Image (tube, rainbow, N blue to C red; front, side, top):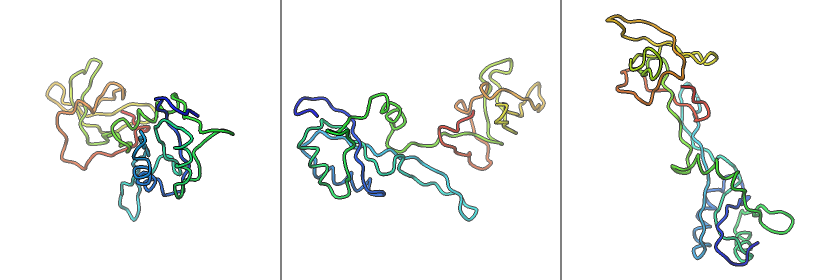
Length: 196
């Protein structure tokens, strides 16, 4: 553990379940004089109950609060005295910083805030634009998405008529949307479920 210097590193506090946000308040009060950044990554989830869909925000790593600070013995003992902080994650002797390679993906996911948002995936009835291949530039409506084959069945206006074609999912983009249809709002899935 450092006893002086300027190296800010990430550490994990092991806290009582459900008290992660309370820890943020305690840390902001108790550690006002310290250079300390608090990160409590959260994710948005869809839950269905009673036929309705609800959006909930849950802590990504329950029981852990991540802090970026210059750890010294004084700070370590003050942190351990905060109610509902069980310990600062450590080896046999001192707190262990979280390796940069483990923090990098967490910081990438939370670069726009602590809550990891949904990616929008447009399903049946949503408009897409073809971004590669012989039909590049045409826009159409998704009729079906085959997750297994990674193909999209879309309805296009081609040569003055409606045509249905199958296109590889990598050849269409929902990011280049010009307008949306008046049908129901898009389905939303977590980032890891993005297929189009």
